[in-house]
Length: 465
Image: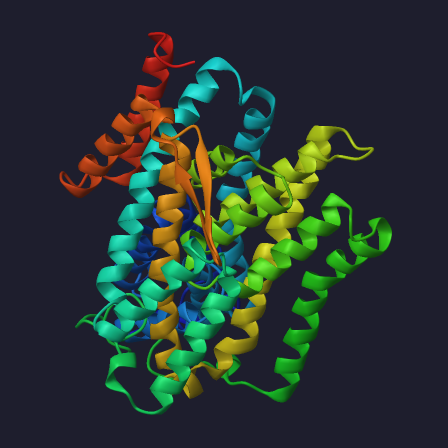
């Protein structure tokens, strides 16, 4: 195919896409990135592959499969990967940075409103409606991922074991993922077909070929890994990630809320396999029960914010960091502390995402056909289904019931709902949201808008307080 003449302008690479054009395209992708990773990846595919024809179908899916192996939001990492592939490190920073910028601004604004007015009339009613839809959204995520991941009895068994481990035994999420990965790695390395159920978001389909794409068939020179580039990228991104955390620890001590935010969300950045839904069960457990940063219902409010704004769903962690610092500001004004806490949580959540791409992407070809790694990915994805099911039940219990009763039999312990504390309107809105999304295929944003509006109307009618 004929490519644009890149020699006429020195800022235009051989594939003909200038950096200024890339900025416009990635800004458009960012502003349309609603609907969680499935919706975000679909938007990216439509614009980058079908419309702009930057990369081929196979290259897009290959990059996506690699991002699925990583902790963190795969859609943001996929944007970073393709941006890096097209325009080196600058392109990766632009694509990945723009992908999260609208979410940072939106969640911060909503966090301010929530902190100042969250318990006031209409605002509380708005979030009451959001919680009901979130139950349906998380259930839909269980179904969507389950259909792709649970292809045989071993995968079903791993999902069931993961659910029981976290729901009934309280085993930490990172340990569950580690064990699943080890099982999958061993099974894949042994050549067991049950562990080769496929990675990514579907098998490759006929579409744009390498030769037809603007990037072409050749591997760009900057993609090839070298020892120098590997060490440089590791040094730069580890410094950017860890130095602020170490500085906060040294200045304020480990008991300070900012130190806790830096350390806790740095840990989350290393174990967020499976995206936001999977890790939120663990975050909720720690933020509510261990640190006391949030109340159970407030975690639902934060997820509702992330669902209705562009960007990765994991952006809800900014809300958690904001509320943690807002409620433990020390000598700072609460809103200033909350803003800094939210930004710190965001920094340590997303800086590692750039590290994983810039450090690991040059070696992606080595990983492409590795059966052991594919087995680990398949097992982790199956376990994530069980963890998300736990999250759905946790959300449903704390949305529909005002009280829970702790149940303990030896090592088994869980919270059982108290039927007499049922909130009838929350139950009805949750059921309506489930019917709308599952039976009538109503979109997520439409469902959230409808339940939020219903919450406001119920408040105005005096039926909820």
